[in-house]
Amino acid sequence: MEIIDFQKYLEKLNYSCHFKPQLNNGKNDFKIDVLSIGLDQLLLDQYDSDPFIELCFVPGMEEKLKKTQLLQYFVGLPFKGFSMITEAIMHDIKDLLLHVNFTLHSGHFGMNLDGNYLYYKHSEIIEDKNDKSEFNSLVDTIELINFNIYTFEQAFYEVISEQKTLKELIDV
Image 1 (cartoon, one colour):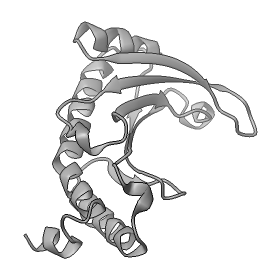
Image 2 (cartoon, helix red, strand yellow; image 1 turned 90 degrees about the vertical axis):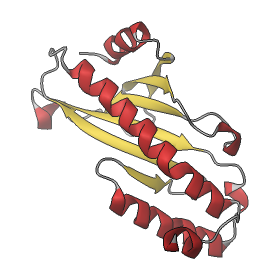
Image 3 (cartoon, helix red, strand yellow; image 1 turned 180 degrees about the vertical axis):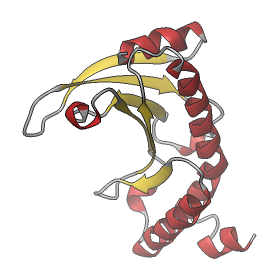
């Protein structure tokens, strides 16, 4: 099963998708095919650019996983004003990440290493590369990601924009 197969399936279900082959610039250059998938229901006025799911198979795992593949879903969350937050707000965001992640059943929110943006990430194992039933799991996972981001994006934005403190959010 290839990423392009997921695109064909999702487009039949009217998902907005864009396939893009990319190159990993690490020690071993190898191609990583990425499928960008549009998200529903988000509060888009809170972002510098529209968030979307980037779906790819994690490269380099073939020998370790034998007949399975590791499928990663990644969503960058470029909230407005994030690059200008104070150290105190950054501390609150990190604590909010811990609090939110504790409540999640699947996937997690995080911050990139440079502290430039938040993200949501989820991974799952595809048992059989030729099993088309994995398509059902794909749609369920996309809906779960939409739900998780939609559920918590307002809280992140309220802390980033200093509309609420972490204490106000947690004490509610």
